[in-house]
Image 1: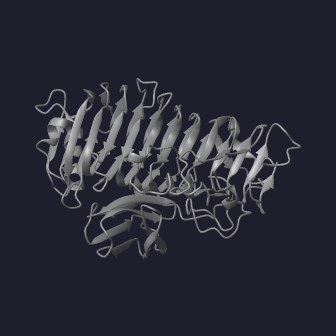
Image 2 (image 1 turned 60 degrees about the vertical axis):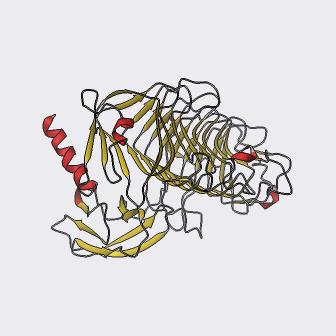
Length: 489
């Protein structure tokens, strides 16, 4: 244990560019994150040792003046738990917070809360939440596992959300912008897994797994009191949201477009919805201010459904004629004579009532068998680039969240690759440890919204890439099927 602690200290010292580490522990002088924040500077790491800590912390006006983060990191390979109270931690008006490896559980209201302190013109920003668990909320009303109000530029990645409040969401966003929700696991939510409303815009919901997530797994819009919109004059509940490469199982309605515009749902696998596949609704009605729900896209999805009365529910005050349906693969496992869904506009390339032929449906393996008709029939899509397992979609691509016609690529694993330094300022160096290989390998760098910003070659197992011109922030290096995140300072 002593050796492990020394190694962790070394790792975090490198990771934070030799800034100081503050240790929090039940048997340490500093016994809470709230206490550690009082003596921390941005760039420091608050390292929280394993144990069960009391919730009820409040941290406000903690804003980095540059692009450094304050790292709050739970002990690796064991559970660091914040338990009970109304809320575990409420962060209000903050900038530059990175939380990793923390379990939040059994709170009576929102389990973890970030807000802008009521100042809609000065949002909380640059928030990263990674490898955390949110579970077992001790509430039944409209309370959320992760509440985000007025947050700009954020990532929620590789987290677990389990057992939400009957009336709440896994992640609830009100007036949030420029966010990426990727690689998370949601199970047994109340009303929603993810809700985006109150002027929320530019959100990517990518590669997540959803199971039994209540009334609307993805509530893409909603009904927000006017005083809570960010910005205050936003003419929509939600806009410019991309839902890509997700697996969704169950739910009354997996997809709900609600007072939203320019929302696209592409290359997802949707399994056994209860009442509808899609709802198109308008719950915030004011023709002088708000767009009608419209301009949506529903393409390249596999929908495996039983005999629903209607696959699509269309409410009043909406613009269903503006929706694009394209290349969807619909299969009714209960009715071999099913004529297809009641889409409001025609899908010229849909496939109706062929079994998609999953490899092992009973064990939730939704990869397609080689003889599936859902493989390789869709042309002309450049995005999403990656499927649920981070494999690159082929051209032509398959329907659903999992690409099953992947061209063979060179096998590169974590053990083979070194990417350093991380974080970095000017250059990133990549080395591939394979003495027998002199192959030329393509290296691509993407921003948090999957926009490719750089491309280079890994030649003779080494390349050094100049990134000095890139804006500060979080990026992803893609090398064949291997992907790693780095931070540009």
